[in-house]
Length: 251
Image 1 (cartoon, helix red, strand yellow):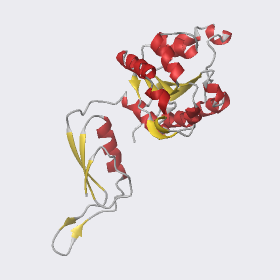
Image 2 (cartoon, one colour):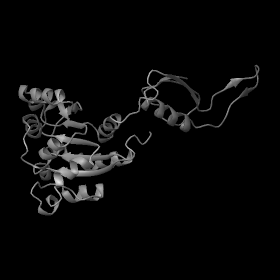
Image 3 (cartoon, one colour):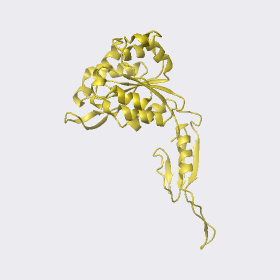
Image 4 (cartoon, rainbow, N blue to C red):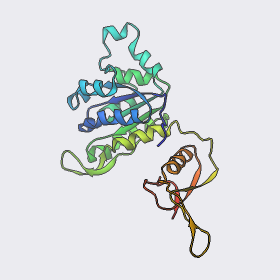
């Protein structure tokens, strides 16, 4: 996997959902892709994950208070919005989604969103009945209409015992979605053929040519081409790596 977020500044905003326990891992997955991460922790989010855990994983001060006198000496919410290349809200509670749709500025997160012109990605997480509510769906459609990206929640067992749509996706999948915002289109429309692994070519009925390749370099090249918009076909022999599911693979 290429570092699709290399040199990118990402704000992770954590709001009030039980899924907030995944936030430190989301920070790590964003960092793995090359991002510098700062965290905004809402009052609701702080009920489910500690400020200290997010500070340790992000290696930056956690921002939580719009009325922080020290931060606001330099207009902290404006500074944060200018710093960010993208804002990820994960998990996004029904209340946070409603505030964003209404254009409110009641807390630090709301204010940063209003002051920002960078891409915003929202990952809703809530009870399946709440997620299906007409009001929540209308709010999400309104945010989509403003150009925000919604990461669809997964289906599964929820904290309350219900089973349905509303589960926060795995941190790696969320980070990958953020990385796709900055995906190069340099190879868009191009077709790329890559051979990888220990391929075999017959010389005669007895002898053949082969190699000791593990396929790692070919797989990495395939990932980079796919992230740049290419349609990739892989011809592979004996390999010890997992192939990108977006590629067409021929054994």
